Image 1: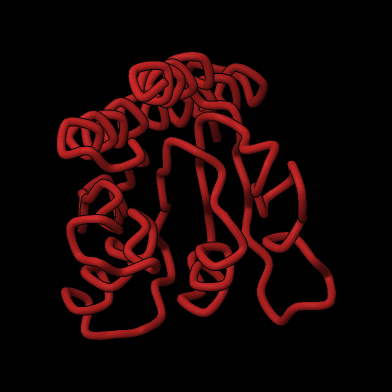
Image 2: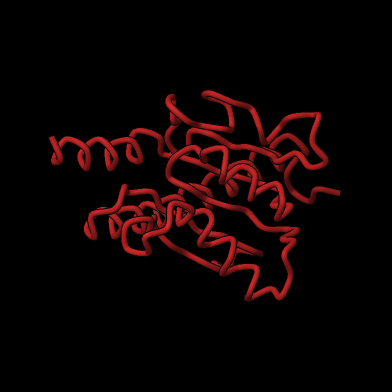
Length: 167
């Protein structure tokens, strides 16, 4: 059934592939965050991936767009919805550099995104586990598989250097 490797080795190989893919897509999301920072935005970055292909990418654009909802997550959800011609996004994974806020968590649930991968926790507003647990609440009609802490120190460093430069 598993060919030359046993089931445990097979499981580890799959886990390693997922971890490597998560790190790769998180690095790409970090690029979006850096671009946002260069434009004076809080350096959050996001990418939505389907079957190993990036559907949408963005950094925060609240200042540029004069729109308090223009978080990176919202922008990529809107773009991916247009590309898929569907407001539901089964099979996708959302990669973000910082734990989503309540607004973004709500959008993730409404879009039925099955998986979220994020870098750094947001102890002052995170809605995945730091302040609230919106995405896994059994009271809601959709729960999200959450993978926290992918390249957390690198993601946090982008935010820390952005805010340190502002002080």
